[in-house]
Image 1 (spheres, rainbow, N blue to C red):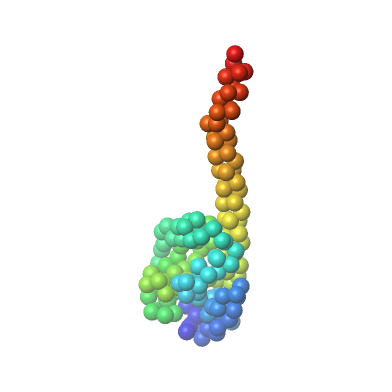
Image 2 (cartoon, helix red, strand yellow; image 1 turned 135 degrees about the horizontal axis):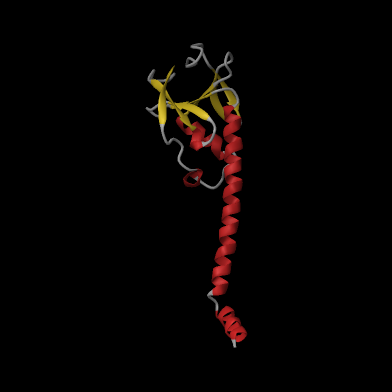
Length: 145
């Protein structure tokens, strides 16, 4: 498989426990469609639904898919400040040097944010349950008398 940037043969390499096709020249990597999910799952354990939308909009690039030769499209990864390229035929994603590490960082931040939201929602739900309890209304009634 040839690098979409350098047009040289990529080599299999393991990065963050994911097998990718790696370009030794530009340090970019090709992740097959499911490998991006596997990479995200290394740090994000809330499930696929809570990760958010992957691609909102995209623009064509000059690079071609190493699998089907179609034009790759550029997009902002889950609306973060990280641009990636993808094959519209769902063959995979092109990541530049160390962008896989950036994906892990972003997913870890997202997981932390979601944990805080879940904790806040749990506290709110407990407060609402308490406000609907008979003891809450009884105490309120007694104070208003």
